[in-house]
Length: 264
Image 1 (tube, helix red, strand yellow):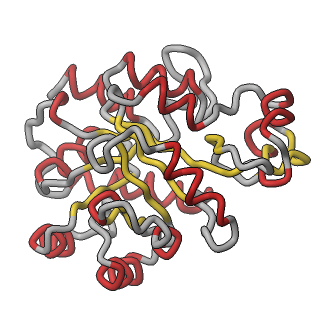
Image 2 (image 1 turned 90 degrees about the vertical axis):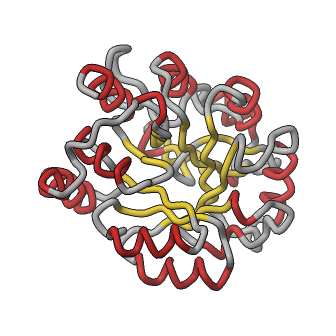
Image 3 (image 1 turned 90 degrees about the horizontal axis):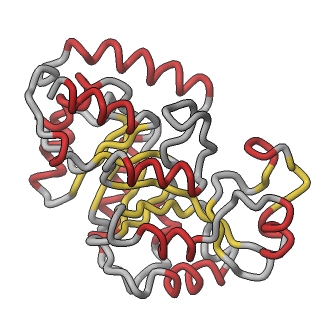
């Protein structure tokens, strides 16, 4: 999220605490909370870097339901878990552009970036994997084959979902059931809803503030599952539970879970 989006989201988290449903009692163990890029940032284990094994390990320890991650393809067609196409923002190595770097060089230079295969082996069956596709398969044809192969031992929808801010990026995964594909909206909710209907994908995710209850009911009545983010406060989490939201994405998943267990 950009700084502007982050500020708007924080404001919405405060304003929507006055909405109906924020006092609903919830069972923390029944909630499908998804830690966006893992449990990153400051916390009980110190500062954890996004999309790294320590950030995912903490989700296991705190019994978070799922993790969201981003994947990119290296020069030699290995999938690594990292948000940006380069390593500048997170690791101060803007010279390392993932698609132009071999996996050996990348691992030598930035060993904290995990392989997707490592993440699957370490967490499958324990954490639900929400994998964001950030590149069009037409631009990187090997992406579809590599990701499909990496996930071949898992069951779509049960073990993982694929999601993208660009719904067309998911069309190359035609062998997967539509129920495993999530179209993600930012401020373009209406456009993404339209694209979702056109493509027949099984789920939508977007801002809890912009996915109104009317929109949510309409989607649910059509058999479309709905996820919302980015939730920062347990009151908003209670509201989303009362609306029947399937998944709740958050950058504060661990804190939310701890607060809910203290005051369900």
